[in-house]
Length: 90
Image 1: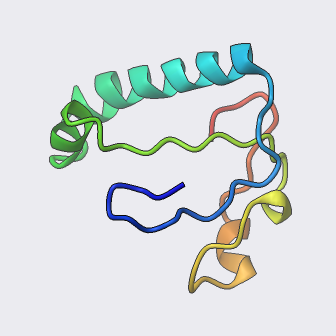
Image 2: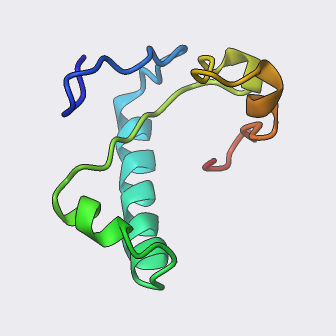
Image 3: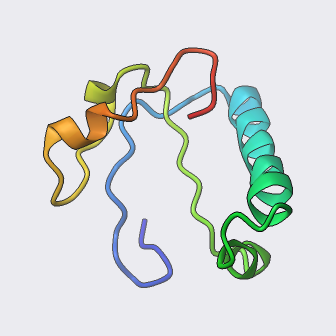
């Protein structure tokens, strides 16, 4: 699906198929973004894109870095630094 710039986003492997879990994780992420990142002014640019609904959220059922799609222009070792942990939001 094209993003607002007209470019297609890379596919998310192992899509999370449980709608209830997806909704819960998305709500928790949005709450964290609003309360922590924006509320504590950790990123001065976050509020503008959040209010304009320009934040793109991607949810995956991946439990290892190897299951994540490759980042453009990044070696596989770069994504190994961000290994998701089961039961935690990453």
